[in-house]
Length: 209
Ligand SMILES: O=c1nc[nH]c2c1ncn2[C@H]1C[C@H](O)[C@@H](COP(=O)(O)OP(=O)(O)OP(=O)(O)O)O1
Ligand SMILES: [Mg+2]
Image 1 (cartoon, protein in one colour):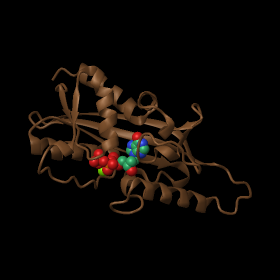
Image 2 (tube, protein in one colour; image 1 turned 45 degrees about the vertical axis):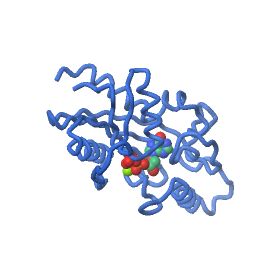
Image 3 (cartoon, helix red, strand yellow; image 1 turned 180 degrees about the vertical axis):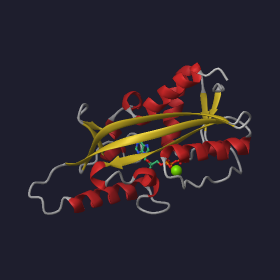
Image 4 (cartoon, protein in one colour; image 1 turned 135 degrees about the vertical axis):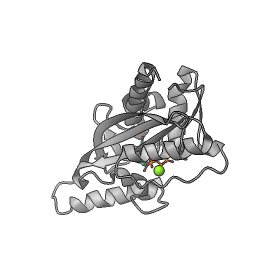
């Protein structure tokens, strides 16, 4: 399996689309998303793992279009919350929740846990962003998977307006910045999505089918 010069990503997340377009442009690839096609089925993200949900997105959209499709299922795992919100990251504050709603819920959950501690720490917990990618070809039924993650801290002091989702709350000590304060290039170099995409490109180039 090989990626076509037009890469269809089974997503409705414009932040992801921007990151994939930026990362794949140097490989001469143009990115399309679910916004570019009419009448696509909705994907029910009821898997228990990121990989399961990514495969479900790629299969649902790939089968509907009859073309190979890339999908991304990703999220934030917070250590003090035993890995939550995890696969529920997009709907942490409820179905249809906005990024702002989810960020507010995350801070309130973490602040509740540290209530009673005498010193107020801006860094509330260690955490990781994780990303599962799947390319699925409906013609051969073949799929290829890749995974990436990045470690950081949840900060009670949101900063930056780049990126999307939980980026303003995800603090990277090595940069002394949040993920939302990085440029697209910097984020791609260290992020879960960047790492997963690099692994996927290697797997695809080694794949002879
Ligand atoms: O780089 C990231 N920077 C910040 N936040 C992020 C990132 N990557 C995932 N996240 C958060 C956003 C959302 O709350 C959840 C993904 O959920 P996820 O279902 O994979 O994506 P989604 O529903 O936004 O779009 P779609 O399913 O159409 O691809 O994790
Ligand atoms: Mg989703």
